Length: 210
Ligand SMILES: N[C@@H](CCC(=O)N[C@@H](CS)C(=O)NCC(=O)O)C(=O)O
Image (tube, rainbow, N blue to C red; front, side):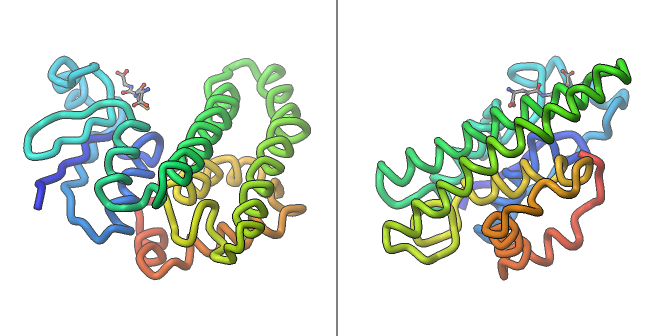
């Protein structure tokens, strides 16, 4: 069994889906959490391959880029779809969630209050409805393939489900009503939250704003 260490800041951010993949797979790993804005990071930064986090260490070898790390772990743990087509559909959703993350990041990093409010309105009126529709179509498409698993791709939980769950977690704190008109997405979220391998982890994980 490989020895895994995930190095990331002490937030969910770009490290949380990897943590959830380990949890679902039941694989132990060292969850190295670097305090945000701490001297420790200044000292570590130059030693990281791309000078950013997350970094996954596998038996001492280092891997950068959060999405690459997630895809690698999902392949290792058989959480990335069973066929090449399913794998592509999983990656399609992961990339779609990256698009959403970048839209929400505009709100997070905007300092000007007026512009922040404008971005907030844009998120509520345009961005969330667009992504909700994409995700609903994926869920229904999976059902149309005689699949009533309730997961986004194939019969089992995959990286796609974790990516959607986690990417929506922060937006739901600033805009709690975004899933109000999307019962299937609410049910999907509930399914992940109550998954037998995830529920304890999600209830007990450190509470962080992002
Ligand atoms: N595309 C990279 C982005 C990595 C990145 O920008 N990480 C940020 C935290 S989310 C970071 O390390 N910031 C600290 C710094 O730049 O000093 C990924 O997805 O891993």
